[in-house]
Image (tube, rainbow, N blue to C red; front, side):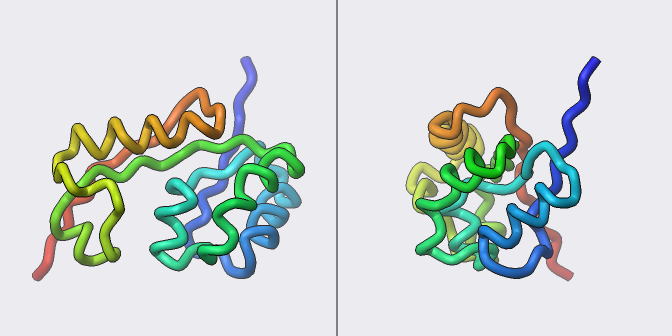
Length: 119
C-alpha cells in the first residue's frame, strides 16, 4: 500500500512558486487547494500566477488534489463569488468544477458544500 501526503495551501505565504516549492521541500507528494482561478479570487495566489500552476506542479513533481466548493449564496457573497454560479445549484457547480479540474489530469478530488453560520 502506498500513501500520498498532500498539504493544503490555506495560510501559506509568498508567491505561488514559493508556496509550492515549500510544499515539496517539506516532503509532501502534492497540494490540496481549490481551482487556481478560484484561489486567485480569494487572494491565495495572484491572478497572473494562474497559468503557471500546472507548469509548477509538473516541474516540482507535485500531484494536485483539487478542492471543489459547491455553490451557496452566503459563501459566494463572502468570498467574492465564482464565475460558474449562474445556475446557482450545488450539483451544477460541483459538475462544472470537477470538469475544470480534469484539465490537470487528477484522479481524485476533495469536495465541500459551504454553509456559513452568521451570528
